[in-house]
Image 1 (cartoon, helix red, strand yellow):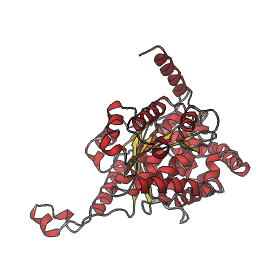
Image 2 (tube, helix red, strand yellow):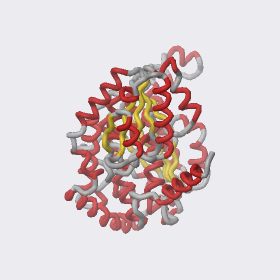
Image 3 (tube, helix red, strand yellow):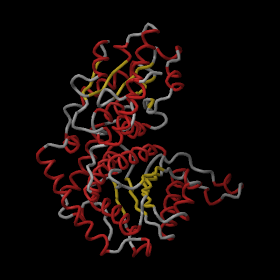
Image 4 (tube, helix red, strand yellow):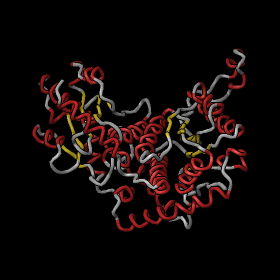
Length: 433
């Protein structure tokens, strides 16, 4: 079997190369996938109930518009008043925004994300020659994330030392209530946008955490949510799990784990502007499913770059991986190779083609080679790389993760081991330098 989206979605989900009819013994049989698909029905029904009751914010965001005006206004001010915007955040508070902001491309106005605590990198953005033209956005759901709190405190001090107004140069995003980041911001006149308490960071890309960076980059968040709404409706309104794209994706991943020992899940976009989608998906999958001995290990790759490195492992190493390719039918095709120059260099086969055409040919070659090697592989074919398409794909991946959690019997919305690590970190710091 294979599931292919109808024309209402901006992507096509091709799973044929996950089954034995296409790739032989490395693929699943119809008898192996059928019972797992049946298992997904319970979670699908729960999601329908959450949507109807409005009790899961993730499912309400795609049709929401009332919050976007204020977010767009903040984004416009930061984009027009400052030459550079730096986002201080980590994990889900950063990766979703990175995915969306990257759609602006190299020539866009995407913010700089400091998503890992690094003293040298932070000091560099405090360069006096640029500090006056720099704005900072601190994002922390809890308001107490150690990395973001440290960055915000250091930024506040740097601005004050330079005689610059924190109220003008900083903006904060955190939950309502008595939160450390909110208290710090309010004490210094810094505006604060509310983070929905019911949204975990890795599921928050459609909220202010993704919408604000998108607005700074000049992107259309309404289109992102419209794409997400299309994917959500197609998934939840399907008459049966085999017609729901996220159910099919989740069932394939779990059935491959159970039946073929496929313990790793590779996400490999074939476009530079989709590179951060791999990192976002890795966090979403790992933190949602890696509990109580369950889960598979996500890996992020980028085509065509990793055709020259990781692909060797995917093709000829252990048969323990599902590879997900993400390809755009149309994108930034770039220059067309001069046929005469190509022929003169003995590279006539690339002559007359655009860079984008070469990339798409390489993606097709990777897909075919994986299938010939009997390695399970699926493809997401985006109509184009834009806000609607990426919004739809991210909603699919979030739903697929939640449905996979149902199959594995874990809660996709908590992260107990991560919280334990935070407690130990605080204890270590409280012990002194």
